[in-house]
View 1 (cartoon, helix red, strand yellow):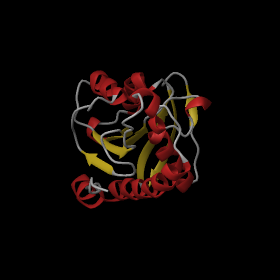
View 2 (cartoon, one colour):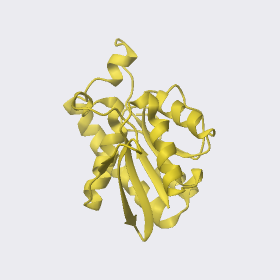
View 3 (cartoon, one colour):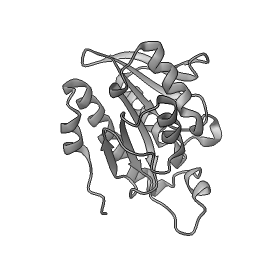
View 4 (cartoon, helix red, strand yellow):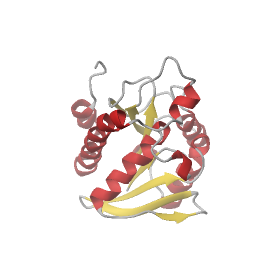
Amino acid sequence: MKLIVGLGNPGKQYVQTRHNIGFIAIDKLLSYLNTELKVDSKLQAAYTKTKIEGEDVIIAKPLTYMNLSGDAVTKLMNFYKIDVEDILVILDDTALPLGKIRIRQTGSHGGQNGLKDIINKLGTKDFKRLRIGIGEHAHMDKVDYVLGKFSTNELNTILPTIEYVNDAIIEWISTNNFNNIMTKYNTPQTL
């Protein structure tokens, strides 16, 4: 069984914000699979259990704020007895140019507080992550930038990236070969 978690903040005020790119990716995956999330306050997540290419998959959005994402991830992992190596976390990354992705099997939190909390709560950094570049704004406070909404031009760049992310997820689940996914789907970091 796999667990795919998109990071973001709950609430209408955060819809379409840069920090919620993980939620945007999950929404697109759910649309592709023609399924919906259900809220489970005990597990602190909105999630669904489905099958992709015959594999059981939990697709989730934490109901906590970004900085407490580890609570939901840990509860889902324990409830469904999912191995840490079968977890994929989708998140924003200001260090990557807008629309670029970086897929890794392990790594640091890189200053991303949701990822930092997951690492702390799981007690390991050895889970898969898919970072989606949201770029950075040199003349804007980082918090204001990540909590700001995507412009129309930014959305035009991000939406094809989300399709690409879906392809990577589906292929990972169908082949169970994450090394090939990293080789095939990691995008060059220069624009």
